[in-house]
Image (tube, rainbow, N blue to C red; front, top):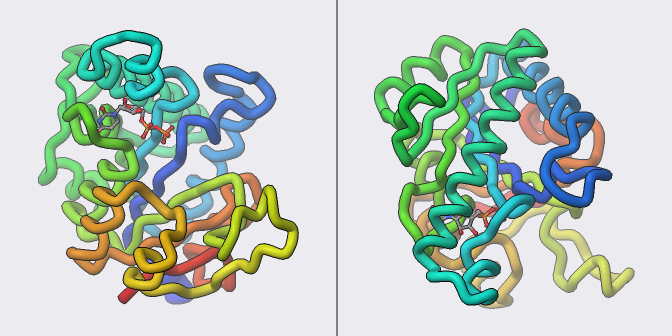
Length: 239
Ligand code: UDP
């Protein structure tokens, strides 16, 4: 392992929307390939990478329910959307010559592996990227919850949440140009100030199991590497 690396094993969470790029809907192959290369450089530095991808670029259960659909069915569709993103990411990683496995919380025989904790750890130790798809496998949860859950299960050093902004701010940075970026925060302050990091179920899971959360800008070239290699990047949330 690279001695400079701040983390030995990470759980990287990418939102489905991060994959849209210039496409407006679905997956932009250019964005996918760029992310695969960024992940490849982490693997080359000896860091073990677990990956959770959202599905919001295709379907979200809450949105479908608003349009009249049964929420549980909508969430099933959302979870299957994360499998589609996972298939695309596995393919992009393989094209970049990175070993990867796709494990789904919903069994999809012939399409990908079933989620298996011991197998996941075995592959991580071999330097294989393990993509955890279908979220937690249960409706009414998000892929942020899945990221924290899998992060705790695989004993990741941190869950890294790639977003469109540089980290956690004291106000919405899109609406307020004077918003201040936090470099470090504790869980309690995030809750007291109601700062938007993750939904409460995901956030309290991370807090209760002392899983550090790192929020950073996935669209900023090299940001992911700086986060993992110990650079000054994004916001770190711990006790
Ligand atoms: N989902 C679910 N259970 C989970 C994870 C996800 O039901 O454990 C569904 C839910 O409908 C969610 C959708 O899958 O809206 C896509 O996930 P998410 O919204 O977290 O994706 P992101 O916003 O990260 O793209």
